[in-house]
Length: 364
Ligand code: G3I
View 1 (cartoon, rainbow, N blue to C red):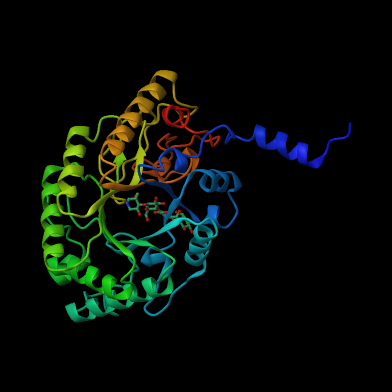
View 2 (view 1 turned 90 degrees about the horizontal axis):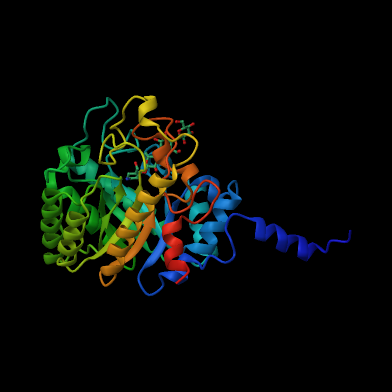
């Protein structure tokens, strides 16, 4: 039978998981906030065409999941490996997206040379400051006018509101945060600058961030948004406390962004997102290897809708909602905190279908 190519393409498209009738999320939430996802190197390099199709269709902002971390992009002093970061930025530019760089100052995945001398001892404060300035300036200068926002400092505060004892803190004390923002302001005055962390519903952590951001802004140091990562589970965070944090962060005058949203559907092992906090595999911790039972899926979708409704309620101060990944199959949560679990935390399932809670918005 004769089968015109255009008709074939149409049929193929209609069989694709991303159904044409799904209104794009970026149009659905256009009056509320930017909506996006963290993307990995496979996706931007064309190795995940279905992932590309949902990102291109639904999102107007992307953030680099891994390729801009110092360990990857700046593995030795003065050595930069740009291929993946360049590909990420090009991908976003070609699609007219708001591009976010992640992350300039972070204790985890820190390039091994960054805070030590040739013998492995901590460098003196002036040396670390020089290295920070060089790194921040090099990254932001390369992508000036192309990357519109940066996670400048990531995960600096512990849940009890004290400073994380990172190399930056141990060597420079509290000063490392304003210093990083000062360098960033100077490197690209037009880029938005963010401070970002997980477990932001913790009252002690909330209070400390409000104090830090107020202090910096009162001194003329720009912090344009406070990033609430939004790594969630079925029993955490307490949404009342999460909402209290949104409101409290708004009082600083900075915007609020949900920067790494996902929600575990599995038994909770820990409520943070510290990469080093892992636990051993046990079958009881991986109860749904072949798919979520209908009642669990319903519960997950109900809770995600509650979260999304909360973000919409505060869309006067929330300017970006960003999922930490594209589809369930590629989520970091399949391997954290317990390696080898089958997780279901993202906005699209393993077949790249939009999760049901979102169709309640797109079909309105
Ligand atoms: O690239 C190597 C590959 O060469 C190697 O074969 C493989 C074997 O383990 O590892 C690959 O690196 C992994 C990398 O992801 C890329 O896939 C690292 O082991 C793994 O630790 C790394 O995990 C990332 C993690 O940050 C640590 O950087 C996750 O993908 C990423 O989702 C996660 O993202 C963080 C945010 O940056 C900050 N907030 C918390 C969030 C979740 O932990």
